[in-house]
Length: 173
Image 1: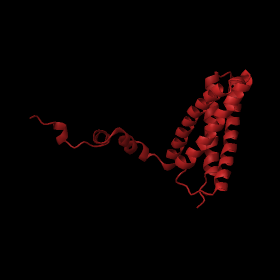
Image 2 (image 1 turned 180 degrees about the vertical axis):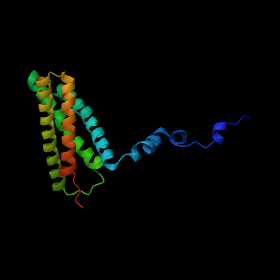
Image 3 (image 1 turned 90 degrees about the vertical axis):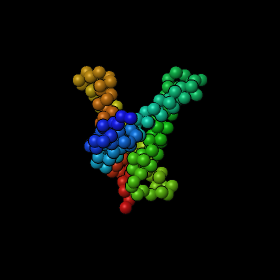
Image 4 (image 1 turned 90 degrees about the horizontal axis):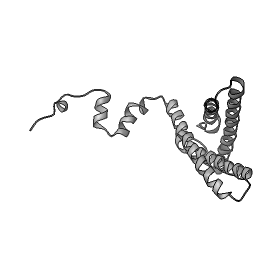
């Protein structure tokens, strides 16, 4: 019976981790654990935001179906408001539990209500900045609509993260 020479030579570094562990554990070991805590928090925030986009689109679609008896403009506005509202709520809940779950926060109903209202206001400020930056990029420098939107999203995300990190989910210890 032939032996595998690779098994006799101890492997070092990432290849050893890659061969011995499932891929999720490899990712965790090689990438995630080596990131500073604040970068991990921002990456969680970004994942929650991406899930919020999917939730927003799903409830937009549901709203377009549910409000089909309305006029076109009213239907679009109501469906859009539904998608935005549900995505803000789910993003808040996910950020509260996962992104900033390690922080001590008040657990009373009024603490959660205050955090949610502050989060919703912060999300509104970030959305207004995103809209303004995108409009500025389109009008002032003639940027393509997607490039302008991406610039607005980048600024809005950064502002929303800072507001969430410093005001909404601040540690009460």
